[in-house]
Length: 150
Image (tube, rainbow, N blue to C red; front, side, top):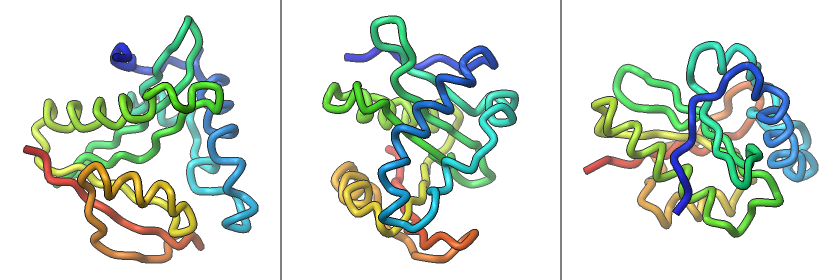
């Protein structure tokens, strides 16, 4: 069991950006360009209080970005350092996102991922997300998914 992530602060910016770079760089060749999360401004997101970081052994090893929307919590990004793969941290971050959405009064959590990230789509399907539609946004072919929270 991993401890809950904490709200990121500006001092975490470099670690957050590095985890995003490490987690998403392998997809550049598959997609043909950097995935959306590599283009986000994490200084702005941290300032808005939407970034959470998870530490393992005193170092930030995972991040989750949660953006409250009108009718759902958007799970905007979840990323784990390659060194933490297989530790259950990613699943722990997804569970935290769902708990946070429920605590904020949401009955739905939504996300989108690139259609080329087939392993992510399969994982989300296994844990209860259902595909709602596919669309191109910002030149990226995205798969949109939702999960209804009990």
